[in-house]
Image 1: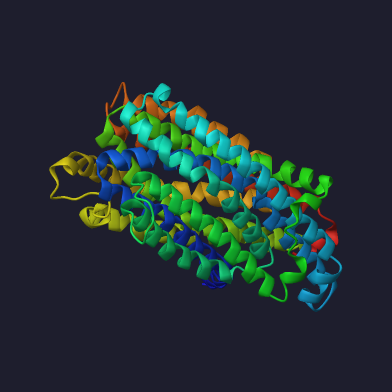
Image 2: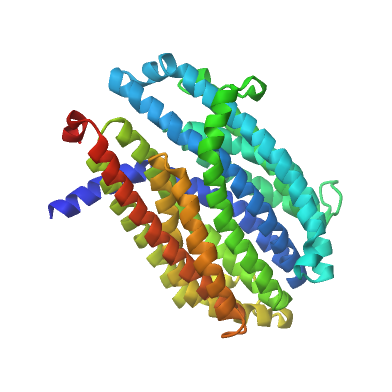
Length: 475
C-alpha cells in the first residue's frame, strides 16, 4: 500500500511537468498531422510524396533538436543548485546563476542557427537524390517541391526549440501549449489557402503545405520569444544574441548535444529507412506506412513529454543529492507510459476504421488497398508503441545523468544491429510485405528499451556509491 501511495505521489509530481509538455508535443505533432490529412485530401500519390518529404524533414529536424536538448537539463541543474543555496529560487537563479543561464541560451541559439542552415541544405540535396533511393520518379519529383518549401522553416523551428528548452529547464513551460495550439489553427488555415489559392494567395497544391508549415514555425518562435520576454522570471535570462555566444559554452552544449542528436537521428533514421523500404512495395504500401507512422508519432509525443519531465527531474534530484528520488523516477515514468499506450492500443484494436478515417476514404476504390494494409499494421503498432515509449524514457533518464553517449551507443545496437536486420528479414525473405518491417521495428525498439533502462539503473547506482557519504545519507 505504501508503494502505491509513493507511486501516486511521484506520478503527480512527474505529471506537473510532463502533462503540459506532452500536451505541447501533441499540439505540435498536430501540425504534421494536419499536413498529412491535407495530403490525403489531394490523393494517394500526394500522400506518398508528402509523407516522404516529411520523413526527410523530421529526420533533420529531430537531429537539430537533439543538439539543443541538453540545455534544459543544464538550466534545471543550475536552478536546483541556486535553490539549495537560497530560499527564493527566482532571486537565486536571476542572481548567482544568471550569467550561466544566459550563456546557455546564447549558445543554444547559436547551435540552432548553424544546425538549421546545414539541415536546410541537406534537405534539398536528399530530395534531389530520392530517385536513387528506389522511389517512384513522379513521387520523388513532387516530394522535391515540398522539401524546398519546408527547408526555410528549419531555422525558426530550431530557434523555437532552443527557447523551449530554456523555459522547460526553468520549469515554466505553460506558454508553450497556448502557442502551439494557436499554431495548429493557423497551420490548417494556411494549408488550405496555399493548396487552393484562396485569400489572394497562390495556388501551390502539395508545395503549399510546405510553405504553410515553414511560415507557422517562424510565427511560433516569435510568439514564444515574446511570451518569455513578458515573464518576469524568464526575461532577465533570455539572451537570443547568438553571435555573442561563448565558444566554451557552445562546445559544452555540443559535447552533450551531439550524442543526443545522434541518438535522435539514429531512431529517426531507423524509421526513415523503413519508410524507404516501404516505398519499394509501391505507393499504396508507402501511403499506409505514412498514415500508421503518423499515428505512432502522435502517441510518441506522450513519451517525449514523460521523457523530458523525467530527465529534468533527474537532473534536479541529483543536484539536490536525492538519489533515491532519482531512482523512483524511472518506475514512475514507465508506469505512466504503460497506462497511456495501453489505452491507445485498445483504440487501435477495437476501432481501426475510425482511427484511419482521417487518412483514407473507405468509399474510394483508390484508397482501398492502402486502408487494408494500414489496418493490418495496427495490431503490431499496439504493442510496438509501449517499447517506443519505454526507450524514449530511457534516453531521457540517461540525459538526466549527463550520460548522453551511452544512449547513442545503445541505439546503434538496438536499432541497427538488431532492428534493421530483423525488419529486412521479416519483410523480404520471410514476409514479403510492410507488416514484416513493423515487426522488425518492434524488435529493435524492445531491445533498445531494455538496454537503456538497465544502463540507467547501473549508472545511477554507481553515481550514488561515489557520492559523499553525507549526500548519500540525505538521499
